[in-house]
Structures are given as C-alpha cells and as structure tokens.
Image (cartoon, rainbow, N blue to C red; front, top):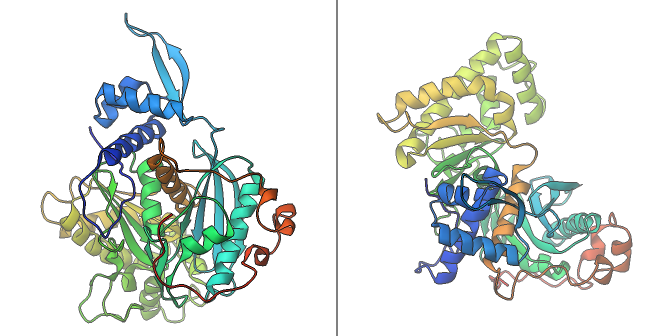
Length: 451
C-alpha cells in the first residue's frame, strides 16, 4: 500500500513538483506512518508507505537531526542486524490548534507527538468586529503558550466560512459579515509565532487521516453533520482543496429540485434536509407541537437521542426521514468520488450515529451505481474532543516540516514575558484588549504575503 500526504500548496497556481516538494511529501508520509503505527521500524515504514528503504532511511536521519524523531529501542531480528524502533519525542516543542466557531474560541496545545497538553476557551460576543475577534483568539493562544513553555513549532487557526490559506485571509464569513479579512497578518501582528489559517472541514479531514478512520486510507471523505453540512475530501491521502479552497461544499448541492430555501439563497440544498435546522423543520412538519421542539439545536438532538433510546415512534420516524435524505445525498457523493471510506463527523453525527448508520448505508447502496458504494465503508468518527483543533495542529506541523532544513519554522523569540504587554504576560487570563495594536488602523483587505 502506498499513500502520501503533501504539504499545503497554493491552490490558485498549477506548477510542477520541485525536489523540495518531493522531500516534504516523503517527510509527511514517514511521520504520518509513525503516528499510525506507534513505534515502527524503518522496514515497517517502508512497507506501509511504499517508499524505498533508502528514502525512508534518509528521511528518518533528517528528522532525527532536527529533533522530530528519536530511536526508541532496539530489538533482535531473525539473524540480521538489530532493528530500531522510532518515535516522536514529546519534548521537541509545542503545537497550537485553534477552532474558531460561531460563538466561541477553543484552543488546544499539543506536544510534538500531538498529545493534548491543555485546553483553553473564550466566548465571542461581537463576531462582526474583526479586531475584537482576533484579539480574543490571540489572547487564548497566549494562555496556551504561557501554560506550556517551549518552542512554538506552529499555530493553526480554523476560521468559519470561506478561507484562503495561502494568503491567510477569511474570504467570506456570512454570519459574521466578514469579507477579505487578513486574519494571518493581523494575528502575526499580535503574536510573533508561525501562524497558518484554514477552515474546519479541511482540519477535520486531516485529523481523520492522521489519527482517525483515515489512517492507512487512500481515499477518504468526511461529512460534517451539524448546524451546517459539508465535506472534506482526500484523494490518495492528499487534501482536495480546489482552486479557491472551496472543494467539499456538498451541503450546497441540490437534493430536492425547488425545495426548501437554503441560507445560501438557493433552494433544495442538502443542508436544508440533513443539517440540524433541516431535521427540526422536517420534524415540525409532522409533529408541530411536540415537546422536542422549542429548545436549542443541541437540546433537540438530545431529545431525539433520548427518544431513540426509549424506542419512541416519533424519534424513529425522524431517523427514517433523515437516513433517506442523507443516503440519497451520499449516493451522489459516492458515485462522483468512489471513496474507500466516508466518515460522519460533528456533534449531531456522534449523538445519532448508532441509529443512523445502518439505514443510511442501505439507502446509499440502493441509490449508488453498482460497484461504487459496495466497497465504501460508512462510519462515525472515533476521534474524541475537538478534531478541528487536532487537525489544525497537524497542519501547523506540516508547515513546520515543509521548512525543515531551510531558514524557517522559528519558534517564539524569547520567553512569553519578553513579548506583548506586561499585564497580559503576567496574567494569562488578561483581557485580549492588551494584545491589540495601540492604534487601530483600518482593515487592509488586500491579500497579504504568506510570511
């Protein structure tokens, strides 16, 4: 089996792979193999990745030289030289994964082995003000860094809506009324650490590839089932981004001609039937005065789950309707991509998955081209808390590895007390206003360089 993970590349530019690209690809394949296998030998890595033993040896030597791998132990082989097992050292540095959602910021700090060290969070009260939101993000990142001293290998920030990762720009966040906000540059002005920006669907897919149902898988699709609906796509172990990083907007493909009005302005989108607001609408049409209704989306899903556990007729009816719509929509996805695995992710999928999987797969199979879905495994994510933060930390690690051996990937210049305001440095929970520039300049909406 041969699979690769390539570095994030400029989605607006087609170009031939350079020697550096190929070297980076090999690094990612080796490191992903180590996270998949635990403490493998060089021979085991060669068998898993399909890379030659010579390439594996060269990459391992390089990664040992920069402190990203260590030789864990030696063990006897059958008549040959002792084999050495490899592992990622926990003390190499820290990685920060940031999940910025509609109402909150969650920040996870990880060691180099991507073991979570600490969690931090803030509530967002004024999402329409970019300086305020980015100040809160920076303040939360600062808390994570102060709590986990060491070299910062990278920070990955997931932003809602459409994101252009090369420029580091939030292109369009409709619920926040953002357009072309230079997130990466503004955060870099607040914190002197390597920062990259992406969106949650890409982050979740990377987390599944490295640590979840996508380990060892070539072709993977993650399907987010929550308030919004979308997909992340990996082909040959590599993220599919599209020309503007918008590949995966499956939630805004048409499921029902002239159907329900979608928040995107179109009619009949997949999201309007399988997203949680769509589930509520479907349920209310059949049971308009039911006690499940009237609460938040999260509470509605909890009510449905409780009803399923109690074998309630109305809860089973909703699952029947939902699995029919979801299976139809997934059949279109499977016919188009023919993936090896489809993973349902996000909170609603986790809550309803035990009852949703079997009927959804049956509907998907009945509506797929013969031979397309029979080889596709449908499952629910088994990654624990916050796969978005884990995926963004992994993307930050990919960026760091992309610069191994060249002058890049610097960490924090000095201890935290040497940068930012003294108040914030002494008190990690200090208000994010301390992190903002002293004079608020008008937003520069031009695309900044990707430093």
